[in-house]
Length: 208
Image 1: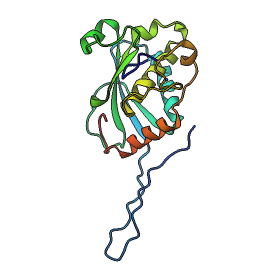
Image 2 (image 1 turned 45 degrees about the horizontal axis):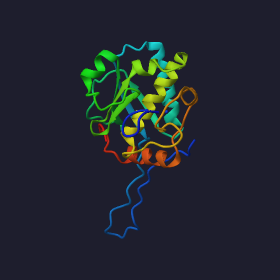
Image 3 (image 1 turned 90 degrees about the vertical axis):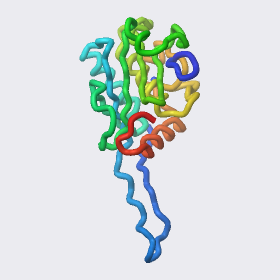
Image 4 (image 1 turned 30 degrees about the vertical axis):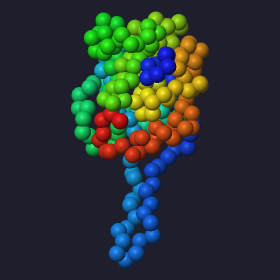
C-alpha cells in the first residue's frame, strides 16, 4: 500500500476463545467459562476531511467486509466521543480522516514519504488517513473503495505486531488501483494474530 514501516501504503473459520481449566478436584475452582465476547473493533471515526455521508457509508461497508472475512466485527462511531472505558467487549480505536491543511498540524509529517496514504500509532490506538492523497490516486471513481482499503490497512497496523506488511493482500506495502478496487484479505497468520489481540484485550480497552 505505501512505504515500508508503520506507514500506509487493504474466509476464514469463526473463532471463539475458549479457556479450559484443568481437571478439578473437590477443592479446585471450576474451569473458566467460555469467553462470550465476539472479536470486535469499535472505530471512532473523526471526519475532519468532510468526506460526504454517502461516501462514508460506502467506506464503512468496505472496511466491514474486509474484517468480516476474518470473523471480526467492526462497529463504526462517527466521532471521537467516549473513547475510553467501555464495557461492550470491543477494542476501541480512533481513525482520523485528515485533509491536507490539517494533517501537518495533527502529526509530524517530516518522516512520512510523499506517497504515504496514512499512518498508524499503535501506542495510542490511533490511525491518521491522508484523504487528499487517497483522492489523488488514479481511478478517483473508486475513492470510497480506496479509502476503505487504506483504513482497513492502517487499523491492521494497530492490531498487528511491528513490520506487519506482507507481499500480498490487504497488508501489502504498496497500493495501486488494481489492488484497491478488489476486496483484499488478511493472510491466515495475520487473521489469527488479530483475533488473538481482540480476544485477549481487557474488556473496554482503548488502543493496544
